[in-house]
Image (cartoon, rainbow, N blue to C red; front, side):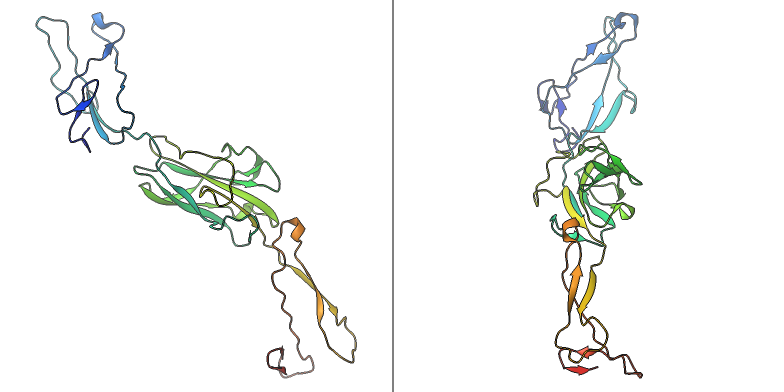
Length: 278
């Protein structure tokens, strides 16, 4: 260990500062001059630093001949022990985790990811909950499962400890549908962010979000006045519909405009606040 432990080596039972060489087990053909060898490390499992491993051979002569040179890449190698993906990997867009709030401008799902060592890839799933087991493949909707079998590789900036990632879902969205998105990340050692997936809990995780998508405007109608000639205008009324029962966000506001069509010089509007034509 040439990092935090200051050059300690493994004795077979502990890490210490001695120059330890541990005997490996020989395989077949040892007596014929060529043999495989193995050693099963049984020390602390939390290896997470840079390490050098060096091997040397001994023959059966008397006295014994032993290897004294250790070519890098052949008899010695340097490696990183990376046993877990540290995280977190989070979704920042959509940030609001509320299945009762609709979005109309969501064309990209994005976020950040952190690991103490490296990033190999970030993947995401986009599930159409209105259609059930339908997952976006990047170009079409396919049947799948929430276990991540339909993960799509995200774009990312950088490969170090903290990166940004994003996933273009412009052509995937259908107005009035409810969606769930999940994110997964893997480092260069092959460790996945854990747990990879689980049941959705509102506001309970940064790796799973649910939301409605609504890009359809409400439709408004005027019932009073209904047109023609009238003698008095005491009230203007009508209806506005946004299909709330079909997954739309509902009517949030209605505005009306009253203009004087007889004014040929300019288009004038009635001001409610001043009570005059403007």
